[in-house]
Amino acid sequence: MNYSSAIIFNGKGNPLEEKSFPLIENPEKNEVLVEITLATICGSDVHTWLGHRPFPTPCILGHEIVGKITKLGENVKHDFSGDTLNIGDRIVWSMTVGCDDCFFCKNSIPQKCVNLFKYGHERSDASPFLNGGLSKYIILKKNTAIFKIPDNLTDEEVSPLMCAGACVLNGLDLANFSECDYFIVQGCGALGIYACAFGKELGAKNIIAIDKIQSRLDVAKEFGANYTILYDDQTQIVEEIKKITKGKKADYVIEVTGDPTVIDLGIKSLRVGGKYILLGALYPNSKFTIDSSEIIRNVIQLIGLHNYSPEYLGKSIELVSNTNSKYPYHKIVGPIFDLSASDVEKAFLSLDAKKSIRPGIKTN
Image (cartoon, rainbow, N blue to C red; front, side, top):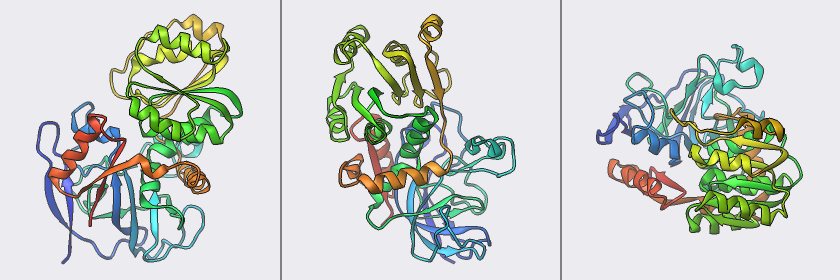
């Protein structure tokens, strides 16, 4: 019998564990066996590791993953877009799997399915075990939305789309994002970088990127940001935004910092009739205080989104494929670490210290 190595998270404060699992080389008829070629570390993986939220353990973390098909279940013939699947195809897939039958699945928010399965978020102490990205192999279960990767995209250009990119694009679409004069991006981690590029491609004439780290603002400029503001005093930032926008303020603002204290600033940065897209501050006790009269009197719309509907992974792949000569998407990922407990911990520490945007884990 062959085995797959994996890195196990056993809860806050416990060391990461290297473990081998028996490899089910003949998957069930609706499943797919995938050899992982790259997994990228999301900020939520680090928050889990640090104990910022309740989480099932033991678990194989990692939900931004690309790989090659090793075995196909007999019923799995096509990907989400209808393209034929074959052994050896490079693929990525939606990080959530719904039942297709509950209220939420039938009303365009399948990522809130009452029987939701989420890669990198499930216990790994029962067969088939392999359900997260920090592993040599993974088993894709029934109803997983699979997407073939275009030949013109590298693993590094695709992996973060499985969470960050698809989530941003879904959020923009939920806000009916369209041509506008000013779009503010609060936070220039992976989601913010995608927000800059995607916002520009969807019609934002001017993008204002805000972050506490100058190096991230420098990257944002490469992804379409016209103006950058180094975060310091909120009052000064509002005045700077008024100056840049000639008093108009922004048509759209997206919050991708994970810090609820910036939400009041985001609301104050919107014009009358503006829209605020909230994606980042999603952890328990992310509380903030606002003046409700600002929302009501200024006809502000607040849009919240957690995760994404699977079709937005396909749409983000298409958008990146069409613009990868325009934006250096590969710069989002790095440095690259090995699949070992010590290297995964180094990757977590790198992201937690904001020394990287998306560290990568390679299995070979």
